[in-house]
Image (cartoon, rainbow, N blue to C red; front, side, top):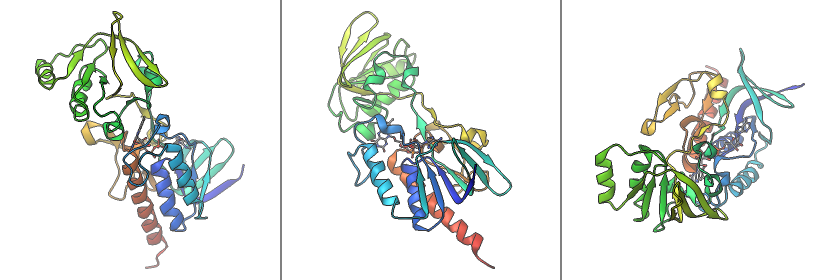
Length: 309
Ligand SMILES: Cc1cc2nc3c(=O)[nH]c(=O)nc-3n(C[C@H](O)[C@H](O)[C@H](O)COP(=O)(O)OP(=O)(O)OC[C@H]3O[C@@H](n4cnc5c(N)ncnc54)[C@H](O)[C@@H]3O)c2cc1C
């Protein structure tokens, strides 16, 4: 197997990785981008909130990104799955099924995946990304003033319902068999017109992904048009960050994130992590921003490395 050498390898070509590739391509830095083309939001019908691309399908955004990247010959795009990442004395080795690549720098941009089946509610996967979503900023506008459900545990669902009530005044919290123990929370939600249903959910009924009814254990049907999940049981798409033992820290809203320096580098020299892979949830616009920043940082570092003093 021939080893091919690049200055930078980007693993993952979602909004974060493609944005890094664009900056590096324009900086004429020999870059390889490996992508399995399965971004986290592929299940959704429309991606929202990213200026100029609002309402486009995620695959359409990828198609445009690939077309624009194609102009910059220094950035090579491959539909290939990275299966291992290891550090060496000079940098890193990335293996795919058919090739071995090496580089001085690696950007991990492999994202997160949602594990909806692990929530254990029949019919939930069928509505995920079609009428039940994880993020109100992404899809709240489309569900505004509808009959909404917030489905989650007794701690997170009531808190999330407060946010969702900004988009609709008809919100019911479903804790799926868990009891809300905090009496203040119950009173507070009631004051704001939000009902809590603690019964176990038997099944979600939908038509072509659009939620119709939530069936409770006793057979009662509650009409709902859509809803939100505070917790999608998401996990890292790959174990590269973990296997490289990148340090972690507590980030936004108590979520665990990987620690990076002001140069967006991890505590391993030449290794960067961006987008959902770093934070657990970044959204498209922030992933693009982070990818762009890392592209510029790496360019500055390479200029510095090549400068004679
Ligand atoms: C249902 C749903 C709706 C959403 N709607 C919105 C929205 O409207 N607006 C918004 O801003 N955000 C939305 N999001 C969030 C958004 O999808 C993520 O925050 C964003 O995609 C993160 O970008 P990323 O580049 O970090 O990761 P991703 O977009 O997930 O990209 C990661 C890429 O890495 C690839 N990859 C993974 N492992 C490997 C490997 N081993 N080798 C090669 N490639 C690999 C994957 O195939 C994928 O292409 C939504 C999420 C979901 C689940």
